[in-house]
Length: 203
Image (cartoon, rainbow, N blue to C red; front, side, top):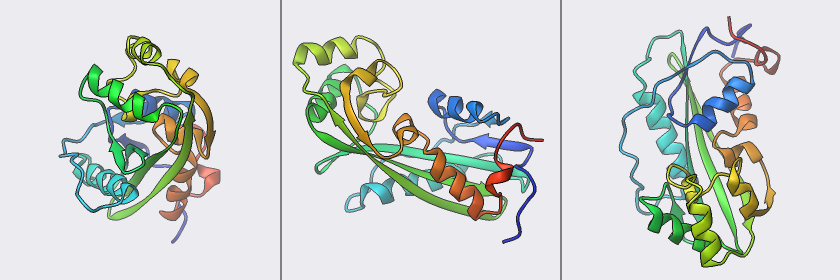
């Protein structure tokens, strides 16, 4: 594919996540946020990685910015522990259930990511292993009281107070935050934007 000399001037983040927006801002990119309205239910019999990629693709395709000049970036993150796929908690009790499952164990954080530029579409996923410290019920409720749990897959934020829950990680840290930047960069290369053109403000 022929390389383009710069990122497009119109970049759309198809997500309401402030963590994903912050990561793109740190790259110096100019973009706008347009969360899509899709059904984020899980399909039975589909692997977590395929679930995440499927939802990321649906978000990218559902973006109202469908002009050929817009680059749409979409992502979906799930937490996997054993046979359980954890999305965002429905409430404090659900957050307690999720964090209790993760206590003292290693889980996977999987983010599906999709980029769409006109008719060009590329997707992939990142899988990071995260190991939690052992947590008592009191410690879990104390963390939930911090207010970070409700809009996070698995009920915690590694970039916030939830960092104290984590013993170790193996893989991409930014994936656990919600947007695997290496994977995004490689997908941009796949659609014709070389690494050398991915730094700095867009034109």
